[in-house]
Length: 177
Image (cartoon, rainbow, N blue to C red; front, side, top):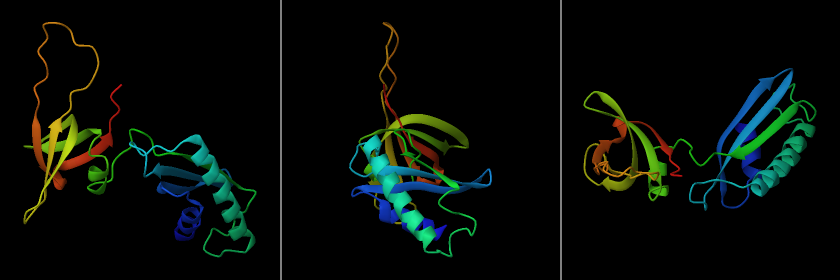
């Protein structure tokens, strides 16, 4: 809903953006779900204070738009029949490709991709891309995850992957705890 997107964009704090926004029918009213992204945080996570400030600003702007009879909003939406949920997009969010690759270059990623007709899932780090004509080639290297390693067990060998964007099915930020 374009007008709701515009109202939400006006409520944003500096350095944040909307990751997703959904307006859902819910029990005779509406439920608005907003996920925020902090452009200055290493994993894009917003904090509770950012969520609260955005919520207050959005409610204020949305209620004003409803009071003014904003015609692009659902006719039965009013200040009394909607709920609002604001959260972080999450530290293990799905990436928007290819744009988020450069942004999260230093972070480990959980990458699902197709190679030789088989779907693989690997924990990797994005290394960059090759500038050339034709399909862009993206470079990834395996990421050694933490955790305990038993003595005598062979260490995981480092792999590199050269993939086109078409080979990538999904990519998520990966927290190595």
